[in-house]
Length: 368
Image 1: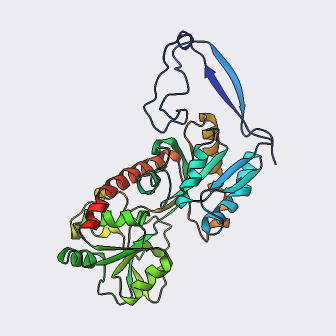
Image 2: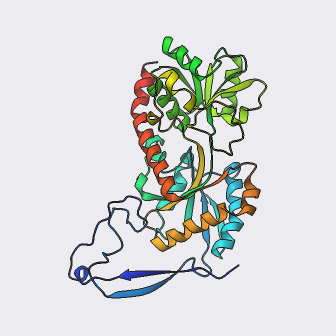
Image 3: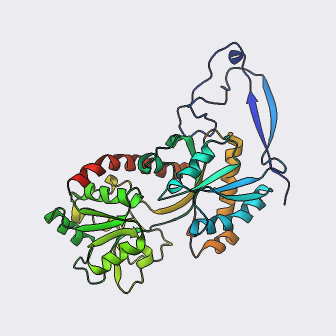
């Protein structure tokens, strides 16, 4: 294990602060140096020429780093964390511990890390189905933190995955057929998903809003019963993680809920939403959650000192660009580095779109 990385931070002390004057306030909610209340933790550089250099060691010798997992052991998330573990240890030069803090659909893990100091020693996974942008809108128990209380470290895997799936012999030959039927027959189309409270639930609301349709939205507790009812004809279509059915003998993917396919997408023959705006009379600019890809990333608590935050971002980038890590995860992840600045734009749009659709959800359900 290599020596702990040392990060230098220069803290400027001002005579104005010493005499009781207020410090400047940052307007960006994503600033790593920002405190929870929005107050900048770094003083203005224009007030004084006096400077004090303080050396920050991160990680400190003998202090472990935590890959906090907000779901219990088992499944793809655990596997992902285990595959990350040795690479984080090599990059950071310290012990990396995977801890499991489950409950409330992953919210308890976020709440626990939020209660800890913003020192960069605990990071959390996020994905298209859970994260700081979903919990404030979708959790039954509202979190004790805000969306702005978390900072993205970057996205490490990204691929279109959500889609609409129908039976092999469905009369709907493509997405346009389904939308036209729903427009002509309000509340007749039986559309199922796992929920309520998951992102697929919100995607069905946005589908109705953007396409000008009303459907019978039916919730299921698990994917097995959801798919069974599709095959028995109790459902006309389902919104789900669609790629698992790409080779199914009993079902087919009607459309991928994606704005476009990246060059590395393994099934370019499938339809995506970009094929239908002119035919169905909608704009891709209207879509915020419906075309969300299946991304995976990490976040850290806001207020983490900026040099430590930048160290974590660089660490994650180094791992994602490491061919050895890419080879290790290629059968269940789609390695792609998206830096935190771009990730934040995606999360902002996601957070805004979910909030808008939640306001419509109860209204639509009452109209069924």
